[in-house]
Length: 602
Image (cartoon, rainbow, N blue to C red; front, top):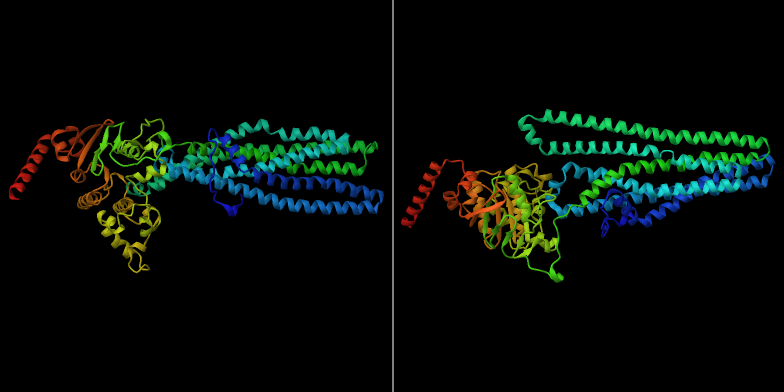
């Protein structure tokens, strides 16, 4: 896989049973790139390892005053230099390719999971953790994949050096063959502690990122209540905790680096001292001593790969664990339809868990009382379990469990609009350019959502579009618009999609009463032939619904019209109005009298 071929047509099915298994799967998925990097790394390291041989031949040729051998040594060094240069360039190229392609694979997997889960993702995983996984964790995972092949090349080079020195000069070669494995494995006792410190640092950094994300998301509210300094102080404290953890971790890695420097120096001293004695005794030549000395000195370079792979694994393992935890989230418990035949997604929407029924082609309002309960119910109606471990009983659409439908079909059939919908940056035309049935024009959807004032504001906000609001750019998350304007544009987008079932969670909580009343009329008229479920407690919306369902303590306990439930269901009255029973009875009586008078007049 080359960088120009990204993105992957299919990033594959990852092994998400644990962080190490995910890393192993990722490395195995890029076996071709790993082999290329390994081969180029071997060329590079073996070229370096061959330098002492050429140097030793040259030194001995000078001592023996042998011009032919000196020329041979020069040619050998030139060939080795070319091999080192080519190997280094290609090793860097293939290693970086492995890094980028591995990071791209993980990002594609995360993007696919995000698209599958939708807004439920941030309900199961903190927003800060999602940001951390998608940015820093991806880089660390790519680092391990990139370092893996270079480590393998370094390890093979060390084996070749030890075997070669043992054959070339057994007396010194045995010392090197014993000493090098000790150097490579000397840091192993320090790794568990270094890994634990790295995990602590990563955990604290994730919490700080989560706090920063929450602060930015709620900045407008914080400014309103004067809480900026409080949250700034909390973030400073969290940042200091991250700094302390990073310093604590860096000390251990500094110790590991020191060990990697000191022990090769000790081995070099031992080789020189023992080799000098052998040379004085005439058992080895000066050239052989120089060769062995140079080979031992150059083992420092491949040994550094052992330290790097230890660091890369220590930092990437918790990152891979977090990524695997996100990738392990599922939309719901899926079941396979009998025979695998495609099943139609039309008809009544029914939730067996709560007993909620939304008849096809009608506007059903649902009153929960608790906004969080309403949000979880909206997720259930969209086919998403609200929380891990929650009851995964599937919602039925026309008697067909949503779990048995392909994800694309389920998303097409049921669309859920959250109480805090997100507007992506781009023009208004881009915003409304969504997959749809084509039955609802954008103009009709904007009219039903009462977006006239929004269109006027957009037309005035940009003079370079010729006064065309459809060409006006909307900033990220619609931050240039008010809450009510964002809600209505999101509602228009949902109406344009024209799904079989539209679930709206508090779609007018940020608009005034007059606009809310007109929106209720517009939605009712535009969705006449479609199933619409509105989770709300506003009397203006409830009075326009064909039927109203009261959900109390997780169960649908009452069904009727808004006025019927006001008159007969105390729990419904307690949610919808704060009036006393006497005041409410008077209001209902007056409303009935007005209806009777209107009937007589008619």
